[in-house]
Image (cartoon, rainbow, N blue to C red; front, side, top):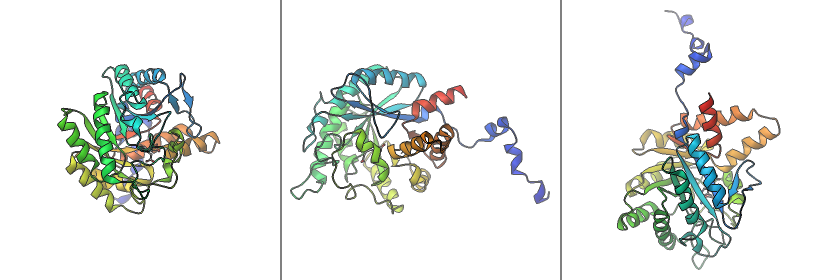
Length: 326
Ligand code: PBG
């Protein structure tokens, strides 16, 4: 055999051949749709910074969850947008707070066809926009915040959330929530730990989506984008503390971290393609600078190729429908 007879192009020669030898495949069940439910609206309201993504009323949330189940995606991740915010994020632990109302409605609409998950974090509910409560000096107080997360976990589990997305990046949050759930008999409520979550500019459009009042940034609790090894530490801690799934976030700019985690994690590894990743492709496509569908498909495929078992993406339903047609 000569080197000239080794021809990698053979396996690229036809659509059928390429399909057969593809190393990575997307499937609707691997996709989770993040959704926003907003208090005080009757009709969906488009989010300016995320064209195609809306704030749902409780009713429209139910219809959208039914459509998501119909499309065959694996789950939905709910975020609440309350009317009133305060220093401790009271709305988060009110059983009649918008996220908890939305959760009960979504669980009803899903009818068991997909997994209803909820964001467990205070930033949507606090008037200062931070993910926790503040101490006298205005810093996010880790231990006081854990107390709030403990309460939030119990209210969310009681509302029917099947998986709690711990996105606040407080030290010890997974341990505290796991202990609270076990202590109250919620033994089947799963924990999705946002283990390696970076302080990212790519969350920009999301801040508009939750009407965030954040002044400053989250660098004192979210990870420094410079750090790769530290992602492993965060993942190890979350697994020891009782995480059922670990997440890397954002996804596209952190594929190295994702590949590291995928190589070593003993629990499923998910990745979150965040609002800025969504907005960049939509904006370029709207300007005619990029082939929208190809760019979307490629961006999500790359996240799977790097090692994600499941991808949270605002395109989940669109992608699932395209996959079903192909
Ligand atoms: C925190 C949270 C954020 C996102 C998901 N959960 C915002 C943040 O950490 O600033 C961002 C998601 C996105 O940008 O799509 N509750």
